Length: 215
Image (tube, rainbow, N blue to C red; front, side):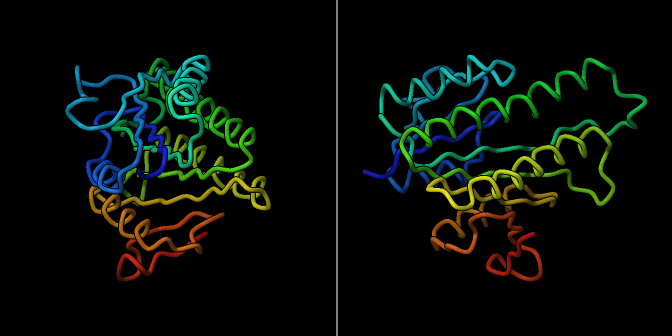
């Protein structure tokens, strides 16, 4: 039996390359996302947890459910995928900004808080942040703000938990093909490379999946 692993995304479906990696590894796998097809647990081989990114109670219930079923989470992966809002900021409706802040920013903070609290209780745990950013050198203002908040949250977490038993790392990419990004992340995970921890890593840049660098 593999590890108890939690995958979190505000979108469906979760990237197949990552799902397949954890399922092949034999993990006791939980996937938290807003909605999923009926009976997906039985079809896909993992436990789906309905998660409302806008609710701190939902974040708490997500972790409590895993505690009740599997006791402790070994690894958690929090995915941020860019949206499709490409309009100039003055053209973006206020409701879109509000929803983006609630789901992308507040949602990430709520679930991170609960995961880290769980790890603190158990004095161990691993958290991986995955940032699939907007694939353009000139990113729209709203997308830039959301990505920047997620990235800076990660950078702060690296520092705060750097000397603890809680290990945190991040992988970031801005290419058109998000599938390539996820595939390359799984290849890195297979190596068990310890140099990835405590920083942002960019797979695939400068000539190959193992030439990733950090910042």
